Image (tube, rainbow, N blue to C red; front, top):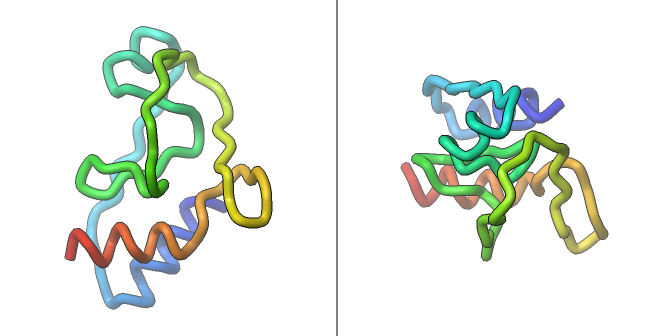
Length: 88
């Protein structure tokens, strides 16, 4: 679902850019990539969540986003659009 959302936003902007997927199977990898949970989407290394504060714990886990509609397992489409727009 998350990859489809990202692809849809990129396609709506006419962008054909590579998407790098990073598997985080363990704490060591989580620390290396500063993993805040899955799904995490970064554009040019910057998290798409506005006012994102990186956690101290990088254990592989699910991520929840605080959206205007409550906690969700996906970032808001508008956040992706803003991050991609800022990077373009």
